[in-house]
Image (tube, rainbow, N blue to C red):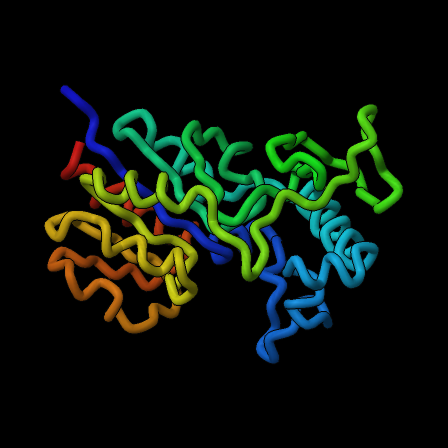
Amino acid sequence: MKKKRLVVLTGAGISAESGIKTFRDEDGLWEGHDVMEVASPEGFRKNPDLVHEFYNLRRQQLLSVEPNKAHYFLAELEKDFHVDIVTQNVDDLHERAGSSHVLHLHGELLKIQSLQDPKIVKSWTKDLTTDYKDENGHNYRPFIVWFGEAVPLLEKAVELCARADICMVVGTSLQVYPAAALLDYCPSNTPIFYIDPRPSSTHQFSNHHQITVISKKAGDAVPVLRKKLEDFI
C-alpha cells in the first residue's frame, strides 16, 4: 500500500530540547546584537567580521549537541510514512537523526556560499573569516537566508504542503512569514497535529477542521503522537 505523505513543519522549539539556543531574547536582541547587525545583507556589508563571529559561535555550539528523541521519532516515522520535513532551523539535527527529506527554508549553518558565485555552496564545520579564499579566489558568507532576502525554497515547501495527507507542526508557532503561510496550502481536510507546550491561538489553522493540539514539548509528545498516527498507517 502506498505510504501517506506526512509533512512536518519544525522550528526552534524542537532544537531547543537539544540545547540549541533560540538566539532571540525577549527584548528582540540576538546574543546581545540587533538582529539586523548579524542577520541581514546590510549588516554583513557593514561589519562582516562581526557576522562571521556570530555564526562561528553558532556553528561551534551546533557541533557540541546531539539530536533529541523528537528528531529520532520523526526519522523513525519514515518506516510507515513518506515524511518531508520543512524546517525553519539551520542546524543539521534532523539529518543526524536519520531523516531523509529535509528542506531548510532559512539555510544551513554547516554550509557556506560564495560571494562571487552564489551557486557555489560547500560544507563547512570550521570558523569562517573574511580572510578565507578558496582556490579560485572566492570569498564566502554563511549559507543563511537573512532578513530582507528571498526564501529560495519556499515554492518547493508550498508544493510539499499542497500534497500533504497529514501535517505536523512542531516547535514553531508559525508567527513569522513566509513560513507562517504554509498551512494555507495544505488541503482543508488534512489532519493537523500542533505540538507546543504553550500553544498560541490556532487562528492560523482556521481553514482546517481536523486540528489536534498537543500541549507538550516535542520530546514529551512522542508517545501521544505515535499512538495517534497509528490510525493513518
